[in-house]
Image (cartoon, rainbow, N blue to C red; front, side, top):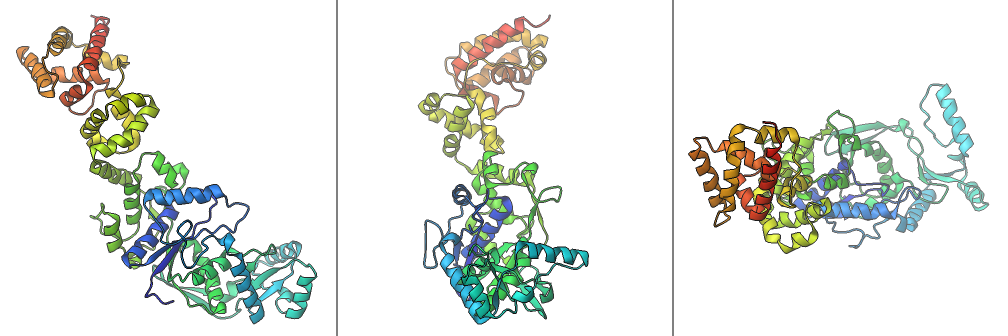
Length: 493
């Protein structure tokens, strides 16, 4: 394959959601294309007519775009080598299959399902691999096979695999991988439904779309010698191959929903930003230095090298992803975070859409205060919610612990009065009122700060108390302090 023009492809089957392993493979293709000023092609391999759905096609496109992967050629973009859905390319596969039949490297196989089952059963009984080589149909006179086909006999089209020698896959990650041809069966290239199999359609498409580098999951490595045979038989030049190891969960089993999240949509729902997932997956098993973590897509592309991708499975580390996500959240402007937060707060019931829309500057200021404390966007309703609404429901045990001390009970009415009478509701004025009262009572300010925080937020940990009270506002703060003072009266003496 002429690699002066780098062309790579991501070719998912639309039979479900886009999972982490798949999106990492797509990322590696995208990074390789961008590094080499090449073309990133999206091809939809939808020949599995029973399992492929239009919903999955749309879901795949949404997921790729969400994480930041735009394709140069593919559905909706088109290009010189389309169409980019296999169901729209059946004529091409039938033409290629006819070429192989005419040249004698493929044949029509009329074996019935019962015959094939009997062959496999006999192989098991003889304790040998059920490597099917076509039986009498492989050597049947092509004219006789054509007459049978034209008379309506159902058949598949199979490749005549060589019975001797070896096929070597020159893998850019693993190095040479050798397969004995004797272990390759005469594989089907066209089903009895006159539709192509995966190995045939993928090889024809990669060649016709001028794909220079096939970078895909290592679950396809065993398919590669078959596809090489298709390439050679049709006179196509081979692309370079790179088979990327799979992504495992912490238990070293294939990553799935039981680990918490597996698809792109799962991670979006769990509060991860697309930039963070992009960054983390691009690093996962890609051979970057251990001290390198946060990169822009362009920086990742510049550093990416296929031959540095690890040949071992990558272990997904959600803690590392969360840490990277926290960095990206801190990099968001308060305005950007406010736009993210508003619909989440409305959906959670913490605030009404009208209230949020009416005072976006306040929400922006709240996010400026809290953004360094967030790890995922799903934490926003819980972290921000107490800035909205009126009275709080307190945990009784924590209330008594925080507000039941004698000093607090004696001082709280005076604290409430001083805050109520402040001429200006600013964090400086609030801080002065609290600290001066504590000093007058010869106590450290913390003896008032901690109870005050709990009374106005319902929690023992928050952002800076005085900034928090300023953003809560005088009315809401005093309402909560008055409620806390009432409840303090009911505490046991």
